[in-house]
Image (cartoon, rainbow over all chains, first blue to last red; front, side, top):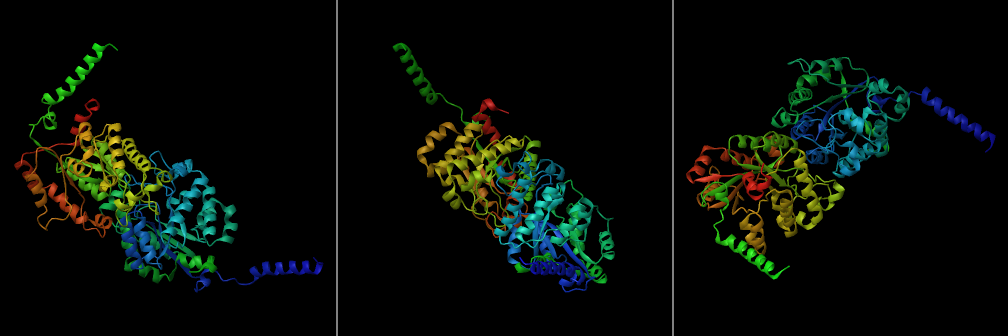
Length: 316
Length: 316
């Protein structure tokens, strides 16, 4: 290699690096066609496939444009119902809610992988552990990876084109190794992973820079963690929306009808219970929620749009 | 062995055999404390554990004494709910509805055994085959046995003391080898198996004598195979009851509430559908059904009573 060639190479490298700072790279909002300071929001329903009541409420909320996105629990008994919906409605923005825990009392589910291959994920009844703690104490990383792959592969085999990956009960957060597997699988399958920047900054700031380079993160994630005062279900959502910052935001909701099935699934669970889910459904499909979003100039987006930015060559 | 010993032995054997004919052995009805010509009847609900709606209707029917017995589908998602009921209500007469098929469109279940060990029981989605024909064409006897054992063992592990074994959709009837496995397991676990004498006589008369010696059979089994005329759900049941013969009889019913969950489970199935199951529930818990049974002097019995006659030394 001649010296001039090396010199040119170094110069080009420098220009390219400095260029990326000097030049005004469009941010996510601009890439999606919005003003750079736009407040982008994904309204996301969790737990699709959990029960018929969940599926029915979520499908209704998609139709009413009360949510932009949702993610499916592949190991659950009503998975075939929501998988058929996803297949027949390719514009519905649907990802996979990777599930490694089974928290309800009388209604259980376990791995998609052949049980013998993932014993560390199962309690002595053969179901997933009910708590994140028990999962974290027992699960082996290789088996976590095997089961996550099996759920993604199964969703794809059922005709779903997943727009994103996230995780039930945040169980993978219990162990950085599990979270790294999830992020690795996202890149391998070319599916964006929900990475909440706030939480990552608090939990593992050393990874932030690297992850920011390779992923689009959700800048601010909001999910109810306790029931709002009766009759004022909108209040915490209103606070989040009125104070929303520019960037990518996500609200996670839990939708189902408060009927016999939901009350039986969620027996002895007030938090995230049947009434809670009906309240979320009622609010997300209400005119007052739509007005709140409009008044605050919120731009609703989908994970499918994020996927097209992250993996433009696999655009569908 | 001396000749006299042999001769005595043969004589004793002869006496014992002839004695069993000469002596008036009490029949089942007499063993249960009834007149020898009593019309014994088990009113049996199938499909416990299939759905919450099924469990709720069956528990209500047990409380209203509208059924005497029921059997649980161990692979179904609501198995933990009905298992808890069975454990807490040891007097409820509950057996195992061995399940090797999964017939509903959007709500599926598969083996209890680790999937890799029973591939011949699963379609390419990993669920049981939807039809008895597909099951019969694919299932290997060794895997049928493994899965039936796993379901019985799992029920016992959940604290159930099964009073009988029967089979979902009559799938084991598709192959005499499967049926023989079921009968073998019954003897091994000391749990009576539902053997309908009528059907056995028609299907495999060569086994009748041997099976009659070793088992208590149901002399006459009745199950609706098409919906009665609207508003006259009782008619076919009335015909069976009014013409009932002495001996052991069983009526199989399918109970659930006609609610959102049932309509979703049984979507596109009118036969044995949500409305059908509500009609069965309404009739079995009605006063007119109770009157019909009383007027015809029917003696309601349970599989637990049969178990105590067949296996007296394991009486509970």
